[in-house]
Image (tube, rainbow, N blue to C red; front, side, top):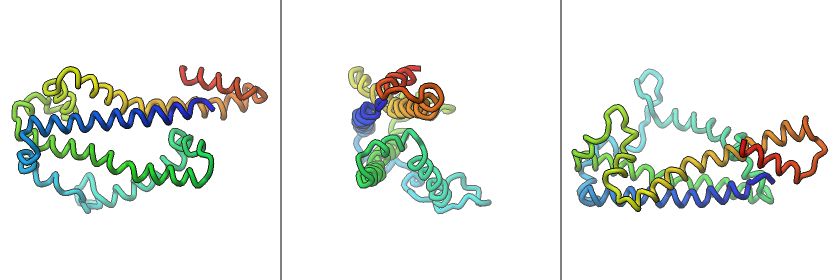
Length: 214
């Protein structure tokens, strides 16, 4: 009730649009960089090290494996245990077993998606060395402009539209979950409890849609 099915299926569509966009960018980076065999030797050695065993307590490190494990435990415990934007999906499953399976698939499925992000950054590190004129286009104070600048100057116009859709998909996949969860929490915890406790399910559904718009 209140749009959870639309939320779930729109996220599925957005996932594939986003993933297609990632591989399009990766393909053009490799193409304009002279092929992966040309880019790999140019990638700085420190980019190859996946793990930093630093603990961050007096060793000057700002990122390390152990802080990531400790912080990640609390972050994802709260995210998948208490956050309405995530837990609303679990609560809509027909059984506990289905909920467990959904959480397991979610955990496993994150790895290939994150790996594709990493590969894009990995090859961009070599692309910056292979194509100095591209490095000059990226403002030093805004390294996060790198991929938008690349899309603007190196990707054909029609494909740019697909990548723009992928960016919107990345944003919307977070926002639509938040909209839906805020509407559901507002209706169930405030409106149904204090304003109209005896109303019908159809009435609550309409109010939930109104809340989503608001």
